Amino acid sequence: MHILLTGSTGFIGRTLQAALEAAGHTVHGGASPRSAGAQPGLVPMDFAHDTTVAPWLPRLQGIDAVVNAVGVLRDTRARPIDAVHRDTPIALFDACAQAGVQRVVQISALGIESSSTRYAQTKKAAEVHLQALAAQGRLRPAILRPSVVYGKGGDSSALFMNLARLPVALFPGPVLDARVQPVSVHDLAAAVVALLGPAAEQTGVIDCTGPEALTMGDLIASLRQQLGSSPAMVLRLPQWLTHMSARLGDAVPASPWCSETLAMLGSDNVGNAAVFERLLGRPGVHYSQLVATAWR
Image 1 (spheres, rainbow, N blue to C red):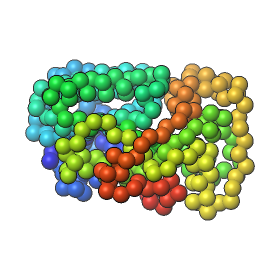
Image 2: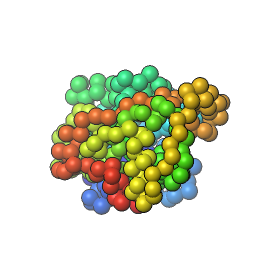
Image 3: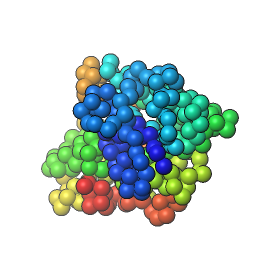
Image 4: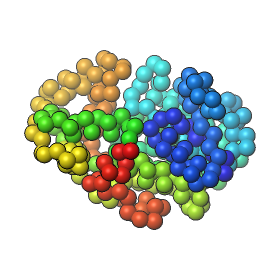
């Protein structure tokens, strides 16, 4: 198949492209105009501004399926979250329906149903529109909702690994206690390959998680153990200092730590792995094996 993959230069996108090409597909990787200009062969696309159908129709010529792997953690002037998560994906989905490209795989996020963050609400709006097109029989979408995605090259994974190396770690209380079900980026890619191959007729929302949930604090402890280190001393950041640090982060657009990050990391992020495991044909990688299998 000829597959248009948005966000192909990102952490998840790079892994998806490698897996899809290994499965025999031709991937037309899309990236920002700056990235596309620096890497020949990429399709330039601007998720901050391509909010209408018109710029997408030429990109869909000769395409059999679309995978949208674009995402941002927080709103910035260069990458406004409303455009990146909602307006541009909606325009892309409408263009797919118009061009007859029925197979769409949307990389969304677990936990957006119950979250009031802008990240969650904009992701959810794109999902709702995609599901409406499916109800009209115009598209056959699969919506993947991963928990925390772990792998080499991921910003959050690098943060977790750096924290795991510290002999003394200081964490916000809500983050320590939040339950997650980390998924290997390679397992997520394998699910996308299946959805564009033997499971090409499968549609709907799919939770993408590892086989077992644990608290974020226990995840960091497990990563430290996998690195061969002795247990660390873990200190809990007082609540008032946690919220003050997040508000300070709100004022620094380049900072990954802000009130929205606190709200997301401080909430449970778990799901039912049954459908995901059927796609893989096996259980996902257990969190105790992430360093050996996904940190590469």
